[in-house]
Image 1 (cartoon, rainbow, N blue to C red):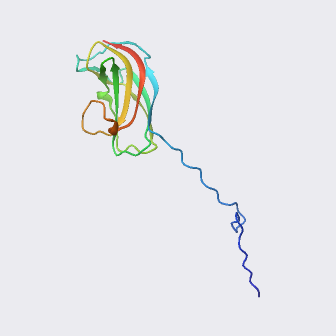
Image 2: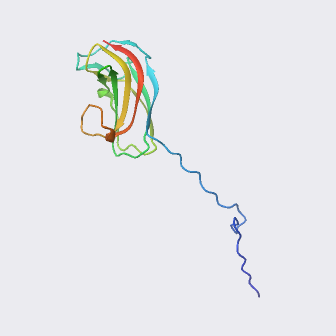
Image 3: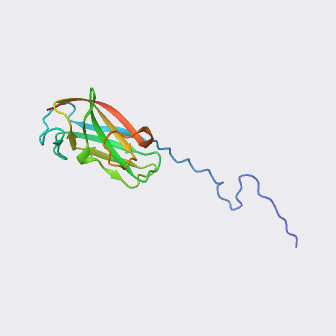
Length: 163
């Protein structure tokens, strides 16, 4: 009895099946914040509760809604979303009654969230923009985070008169 060993040529798997293929690379997710909805689109908003610096647009009041799509290109163990109402000399309000956190915020994760509650520090206030920041600072400070603490940020034009 004679045994012959025949080598398989390139592309042959010896079993008659197709040659293995390289899997497609995983899509790269970058950190980003996208505005998905701004309601109303502009105009005057009468702030219904309190007096500055403790005036509030209550959550789910229907007075102001900032819809955002938030994505992180890297895993962070803790993240918070801060949204600032920008005015000519800084900002006059922030989403303090509606500032969500995530533990963790996974790499590649995307979250859609609508911010509807704001604390207003000064009235009247002419809002010229919305600044949204996903950050990792977990210290209780309410000022905008530093660049090293920021995962993603974006600024969108807006035109509101808060009174």
